[in-house]
Image (tube, rainbow, N blue to C red):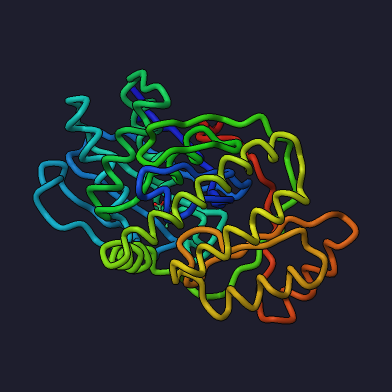
Length: 326
Ligand code: MEV
């Protein structure tokens, strides 16, 4: 019999509203983007797992199945190996595997490459072993994997990779609600700087410990923005959504997670005709996003570029994880 082969892809994401507060079990809104991660898995008769991940310069890495969970995994393929370890343990299966990964976007953008890879791995393994794993179970095992590897995170990026579209998400996956939203134009400006998500989450946690009442107040205000954004996204009120972005950015500034480069790109967008702009994700670097109408689109993009931003062309509301034809 031939070795069984499965190819799976999952989308990257952009946080629209509610970053950081979502880590504290609060709501956010995220959209999946049309740049994807691909994972091909081959079931083999051997007793080892072979990984090729060219984007992170991993070539022919091999580990014995019996060593899963017993040795430290290389940094760049931790999510892949932890997914296999957790899947084998949960579903009491085991096999040799060959795994190949490919990404349509740079892991530097903050589009959630680790989460998309984890989701691809769980989906791919479920197909390899013919196990029915529904979306919520897929999310749960992927979320456990991410927490095992990095200790923190709300899981919103995993939900975007699983369900796709635009989602209302409550921290930890307490609520995952697909929103009925038409595709919308979002300008994305990359700062050229990689955000250090773990440090930024820790900085907010330190601030929370020091000024609990004040930070709780900020989180409550962000909750209100998220709820209003949810309604206005479904109505397509981009002018209102722009105002909400400006307000959310103000609160993110108070949490200390913005940066000079982000502030410059955001102000370039706001003063050149955007409805509103904000950082997207952890802050510190990665990307800013802006709502803009057709008339002002080129002007806004030019001004972002003049301030040193790199425009990334994405479509919002992309399809969630899917099995690809081989
Ligand atoms: C990072 O992209 C967004 C944060 O809210 C972290 C998370 O939700 O896991 C800062």
